[in-house]
Length: 68
Image (cartoon, rainbow, N blue to C red):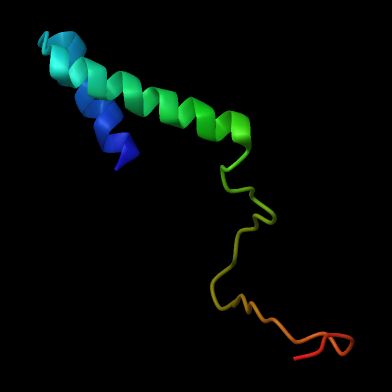
């Protein structure tokens, strides 16, 4: 949604001169910058290329020291 608002703000606000879309695009840009500064962007932990026939298994096992 944020990307859509940025794109529309640029296209309709800057290129077509719509003040409303310019404000919306500016607000969306502000939210994006604040997220970046706050570190809420997802962090890539692992990136690998799989060959044909290979599989990736993601599993989580409960630690023996945890109570639950």
